Image 1 (cartoon, one colour):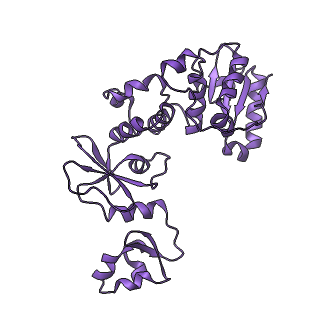
Image 2 (tube, helix red, strand yellow):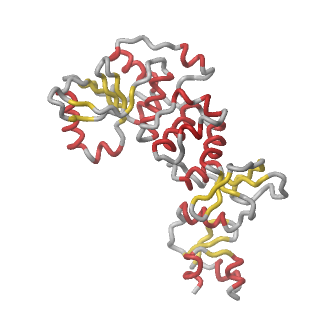
Length: 306
């Protein structure tokens, strides 16, 4: 009976209300996924279950915020390390086990809902996270929110924080790593490439759409992620068609982007025939590549030309 209640998620309060002793949940038949919160043994403690468990414990005035709210809005982030909530100030609650609690003033428009859960609005969520993240990671989140049409550019333009990243945002970006690759190139002092440009051959036949593209130099740049390895034959055909249309290609992996970004800039710079403008990074007052790097000597990216 217990496992059928509340979708399998139970608290000690649920057990008491059912007239059962709390010891029933402390047997091997159950596993603890949060303070006084249990699921049947063998059930995977998914993000959804952990958020639901947290929802049953937060005050009525609290809303999910930070990365938890971002995930509930549909962004590809980790929501449970830790689960984040915001409680409107003033309030008496300052801590909850297993959660990051913030006390903030929330004004009209700062809150909304994601399904049945109260959350900070997408604009307020992006505001809170962009202030905490590096420039690149802030742009990653905003790119994804715009691409998924969770928010409009004009809604963001009404906020002061958006001015800091406006020139870097690209709604056409189709993945976080594509955004990181673009930011490595731009913060490395090279011209900003176009995104997701449709390429046609001399007969007007569509042949491909590189992640990034420099039309004058006919140079395409692509992030080579896991999906490319699962669609290798299709990618090879598309690559050959682009080469036949006179487009040169550079392909980079996650290791290239995250661990040797200087090498990415050097390779793109060489193919463009442009010397990077290092003052771009200096104007930002930060190291141009906000990634944790470690010594690695991966093979040079493949440069393909027709």
